[in-house]
Image (tube, rainbow, N blue to C red; front, side, top):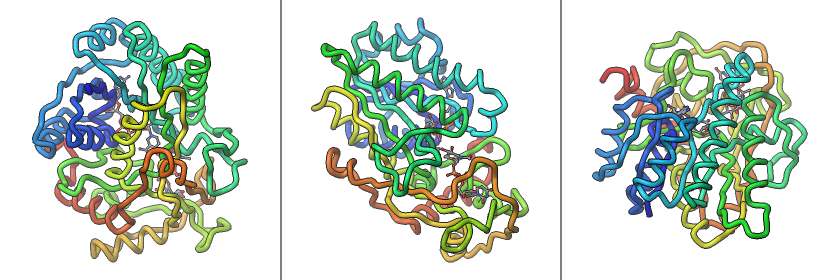
Length: 339
Ligand code: NAD
Ligand code: UD1
């Protein structure tokens, strides 16, 4: 089966390409390199020992999509391409709606024209918002609290609408990721944020290699076991494998299905810092700072639906996540930019 992977050179996309190639899928990547590097392409092929097709281009380019869906005889699409920085989304809402919402609409419309109807969408646990009880179940109320989350929610609604007619032949999996961290165990691909990282794990990794001075822990007065925020961290390789299982699931199923992809376990910021020290031998300097606007105290997944319907669950624990992050960061202190 030949799969189009939009955003396939990014953090989660690159790991997913490796797993798709290993599972025997043919892969075509469309990426405009807005937040990724061409060097990832060689690294993916090096790990997989297989090649893939790469097209540099934008998901909002309808003509390009029409020709590539046709030329490559694409049978399914995994859609990672998008913008994901929460703060940037608050500052530039129209850009986020353009790339994430309008871009998805252009892509789905091109698929409709080409008769390609199998689609896997990168959504986020951020769609649940503050009202949902933890652990989050797929049926928990959805009410995102920021522009980025709204764009994910709108695309989820677009997909539900697309699958709703009686004669719809779409097969759609909406995957709500919890907090992906870690890197491929080879140390060849990993997360390479531009500028100062917004998220905890890449920030810790950059402090550990001396690129940043000190971590700010946002809030130590939450009603959690040590006062710091608790999240459900998931190894990016487990997450990537979830996409392979989603494609296999969709081959047998029409309509739309929503899945949480998380471990079901929560770890606090301090637990992550301490476990990182045990694994790497590096004590990351940190200070307590005020809460970050929009943060929730604690959330984690109820992941059993993915196990029941797709046979997928996480296999790699926090130690693997931290060891593989450290391996990647040590080998590539400047990410892909050294190439
Ligand atoms: P990423 O930024 O590393 O990857 C996104 C890729 O899409 C990049 O390679 C970028 O160059 C490309 N891209 C961006 N705009 C594009 C466009 N208009 N046309 C073509 N390519 C474009 O991000 P990631 O962490 O790999 O996330 C992948 C997806 O998963 C995103 O949709 C993100 O919102 C979602 N997600 C990520 C997380 C996370 O914590 N990383 C959590 C939940 C959901
Ligand atoms: C953030 C986004 C969320 C997105 C997710 C995955 C916000 C408000 N939420 O979630 O929409 O889906 O990333 O990309 O931005 N922390 C620190 N210091 C730091 C960074 C983070 O203490 O420098 C803390 C946070 O307060 C939180 C935890 O670490 O308690 C995890 O933060 P982060 O990695 O940014 O993920 P989320 O907050 O879950």
